[in-house]
Image (tube, rainbow, N blue to C red; front, side, top):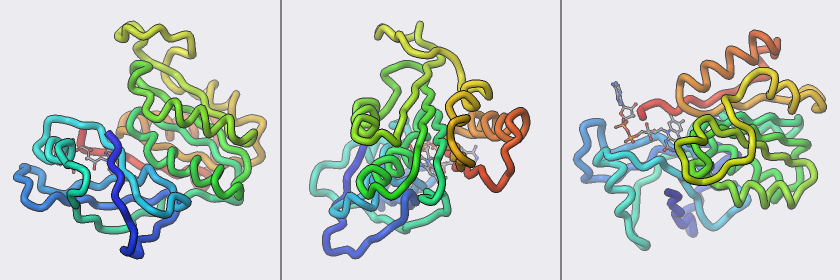
Length: 221
Ligand SMILES: Cc1cc2nc3c(=O)[nH]c(=O)nc-3n(C[C@H](O)[C@H](O)[C@H](O)COP(=O)(O)OP(=O)(O)OC[C@H]3O[C@@H](n4cnc5c(N)ncnc54)[C@H](O)[C@@H]3O)c2cc1C
């Protein structure tokens, strides 16, 4: 679910693509009433900020899912150094809900037209879990500098037919898509196991220097 919060009159500003801490005071959750969340909006969307969450059965997430238009949340931030480098081409590698900061970065790049080429490699278990798919396709249509590529790891678990790539994000796929780019920066976001595997592949078989890799780990699921 995506939640939009009006920033009108608040003076809230952030860089592409930072995170926030979102609090729902009064929610009784064993892990507290606050979660760190990447912003899925872009600083170019000046009237609001947005977050996109995987809704689990924790009291916090259930309370978030019940929020009604007009209700408020407490937002702390912006936080984090997972920032788009607009001087260099980008390779974005997302697993599942890890797509959130990349939706913001891609949107920022096409809205401002300042970033060079960008490639998104996005993996989900089933096609329905490819969040923002229609919007990402439309962003790619708007700019010949942007390409989006999907892979699905368990298509048999979905009733939706899938004619695209099947399997995890592996070193050969990353290499194939990144090869035409001039010294790209690599960004990885997702759950811990996915981020560990991809960063190990980048640093190992692909020989990418540590300084050219940035990652955000979504713990807690
Ligand atoms: C920078 C950043 C960006 C993130 N962006 C997003 C996003 O865009 N969308 C999104 O859905 N999630 C995001 N997350 C993850 C988010 O903060 C939550 O951890 C996640 O959504 C799970 O929350 P939950 O209430 O569903 O589950 P829970 O499992 O209840 O997790 C809630 C909290 O409890 C902690 N916790 C759970 N189990 C343990 C344990 N055994 N030991 C110690 N601590 C534990 C977790 O660290 C977490 O803070 C992000 C996290 C970080 C750090």
